[in-house]
Length: 139
Image 1 (cartoon, rainbow, N blue to C red):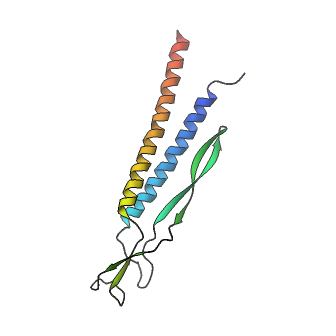
Image 2 (cartoon, rainbow, N blue to C red):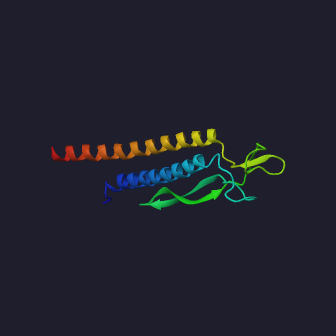
Image 3 (cartoon, rainbow, N blue to C red):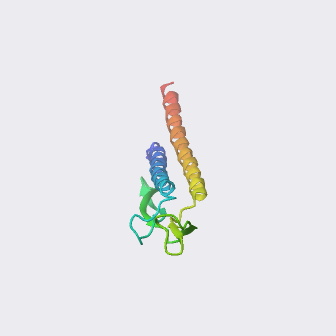
């Protein structure tokens, strides 16, 4: 006989893995936003490079969950701002800024928040179903 609780436990485990993944994603996005206007820490060096979370699936109680596999650097071009008086400006007056677009990061953050909320709702619904089953079994 199959244990009827296992699918709900799997559902909750998968949703919990997604919560952790979205939380990690939000941390990476927050780091990108915090460094969006920074310059190179050393003269002639590169400024902050946008980071992108990479996820992969993993099996949890026979179901596919998700986890943060690594964080890679976006190899896109740096932004050049013409600021000849800036201490980090090159000989042509350009300051190299991170390849971070704050608008895109803000949209990514909102998407991550919504995904987090959706998975939280999955867990809350599974708990409510468990409670309802227990109430029915008591009768």
